[in-house]
Image 1 (tube, one colour):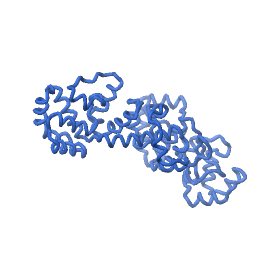
Image 2: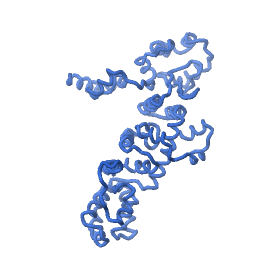
Image 3: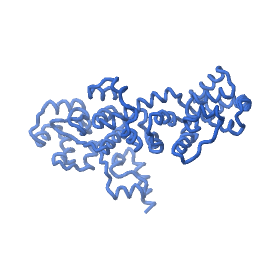
Image 4: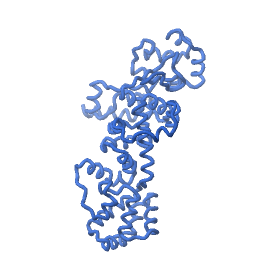
Length: 366
């Protein structure tokens, strides 16, 4: 996706390396949780971490790549890091040797290199340190790491680290047995994430258009386009004479739906529709496209310029509406259910059980 964006913009990869790493709008966008399409930060769980972390520096993204791994997430290490970063809790006053290792991450073990460093403080030689590294890099688990506990405790005492502090640090090392990143890996991920976020922030139409074309999951595709509209972009369902096979951006800050993005229109149909252009007007177009498509487009009202959202969602589930009505917001808060427009697929019979659960929940509240 990034390569295609750069090609569309007329840039090569060297252009990315010349970008400043302190772009405030990019960090502000990420801090709002707008991360869809930003690899490797595009998941919903990472979006929550972004909201909590409020990144403002490339090092925050390096840490975030590690904080999102099973070890820090499941152990509570991610929460500790965030609380200490924002000054809501105080970092323990560790031994000077330990502070050299954990100071940059607020006393939380989030990198493989930090576990290795603590093992060195405990006096382990490099072959043993390497064994520990292999365990935490392959989800060895806390039990596998625990075999080194006795030697670690003795080594820390001989190194001048207090028993209570050493044990607390050991618990963090055990939690790392649930799999943690090495810092170099995190730095690589962070740099790629920053570049992708920069493109999303400063070239939103090109970014969202290309990422939506590559996204296989409908929910993620929809969210990419939703965030594009939240950034102030315009989303047009269809234009008979300008739409291409897939999503395109014919003008700045605008994304135009393609024929293949519509329900029931495959590559062959799309090619035939495009081959018959130009169309004099909507009537001429509707008379020359498949009857089922013409019916759906008329029902959605696209020919009038005033698109009916519910009808449009049937033919183009990606055609999202960013601003919910007040009654929808109230329903979400009161009943904790998605807005009606987001569950229209549940009415097709394949997901009826979920819809029934939602209806039952609302009925119970009433």
